[in-house]
Length: 295
Image (cartoon, rainbow, N blue to C red; front, side):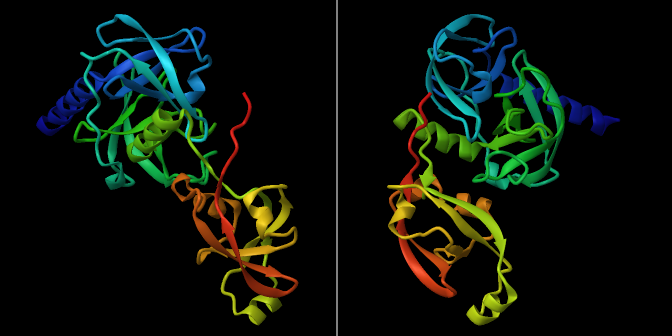
């Protein structure tokens, strides 16, 4: 009983400590979401809860409301950054999200504060819209309004931002390391640049005869079904090309392709190993930046 009581006290202390940097975000009708004072004057929340670009407010931990302005959005990772004058509100103490493992105990916090307790049930992105980051799957309940709130580890540090907007079936969190990179990009550019080739692809099975002829180990690859005019891919890829690898990394499905088109690779030259007319060849390409979609 003493150990159980001590654990209970530790959880309550973690909620109290992390909750000092938690705010309510009023950016949609009726139900506020949660935000985290990530850096001085910058609040991170879930993008899907920010329904407007203007007239935003946040409620501080002491109950006072202050106006907020939208810095930028990243719909892929379901993150939005707000600028707020809350100099006397605590800034979140960030933990090492790269050290998080399946089975680690975590808390999800909502404004209030409110809390939910559970564990990391999986790490990966195959089940969510985002395919270029490893998300945390959570075995806990994200109650209404919890999206945008912090995921807190056993050391009382924030290791992610919770969201129910990236999957209908799963409770997810974006790792803190990804959040910080996104904040950097949104503050600098107002949006998150996305790597881009400009191809439409489908997964295909590599015929056994071709695998034997070309001495291939992989059974799956991508066939190019569309090449956008003027895109980076138009400089070297043709419809019907079968993409085996990019820069030596095997490509078996569109997820593999998107993982290699990270923002930091924009402008880099890459070598695509393709099969064209039954012959393997290398094609040089330059990763571009995906054009912004008109809103």
